[in-house]
Image (tube, rainbow, N blue to C red):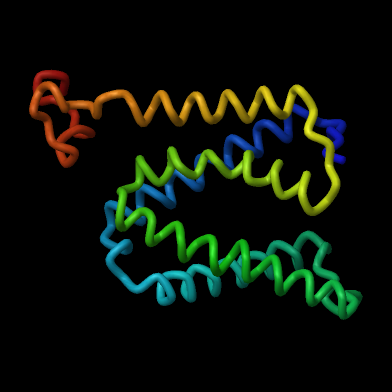
Length: 170
C-alpha cells in the first residue's frame, strides 16, 4: 500500500497549499475569538460551508456522482465525515482554545504517524524503514520544538506582541 502517484510536484504543491489553509484556519480560529464559541456551532457552520463548496466544485467539475453511490459508499462517507469532519475539527478547536494555535499546530504534526499506525494495524500496510525514519524525524522535530524556549521568554516579550512588527522596522 501507499504507492506514489505520477505527478509528485503537483501532489507536493497541493499538500503545501493544504498545510497553508490549515495554518490559516488555526490562526484565524485562535485570533478571531472563534475558539471561544461552542465547538459544535463552529463545526456546524464550517461543515455547511464545506458541503456547499464541495457540491459546487463537484457540479462544475462533473465529478458529482451522488446517484451512483452504493449503500456501502454512503456508509463509508458518513464514517469519514464523522471522524474527519466532526470529531477532528471539534477536538482541534478545543485544542486551540486550551493550548493556542502554535502548540495545536505543532502537536497536529503527529497526524502522519497516526496514519501510519492505523494503516499498519487496520489495513495491513507494511512499516518500511523509510516510514519509520520519517516518523522518528517527526517525533524529533516535535520534541525539539517543545523543548526550545518560547520566543520572548528571555526578553519578557508576551505572546500577544510576539508577532507584531517592531516600530523601528516600519
